[in-house]
Length: 171
Image (cartoon, rainbow, N blue to C red; front, side, top):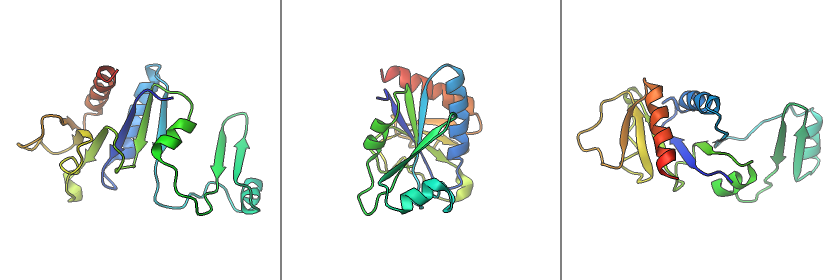
């Protein structure tokens, strides 16, 4: 089971995936085992319809496991069943030191908001008590809650340093 789960949330185009790529590269270079979960509101097309795995799934298989010497993927067809929770997905994953989650805004997990003022959207931290840090290109607002760290998104090392401290103090 994963020791720590941290969400990365924000509006589309804010740079969530770019920040995640930076964090994953630096964390794994330090020897940490890090899992990633990406939530999508869209259908997932993982294989071409003519491929054997898609044909088996379409024929009625509840799950299809694609395996190779390089990676494997388990595809479960939901067929009207409720979407599994983030906790259920994390429980299926291999143990890790940290799981970084993109999306799942509604989950009650510690989160980093990625906020860019050029998008013209409102911040999320003032509506979500689980946001513990904001990585932004804007200066911190004067009424920033004391439990929220304000980080410079253009200095991703600052976000990494904060994350490492946060994980260490959460132990």
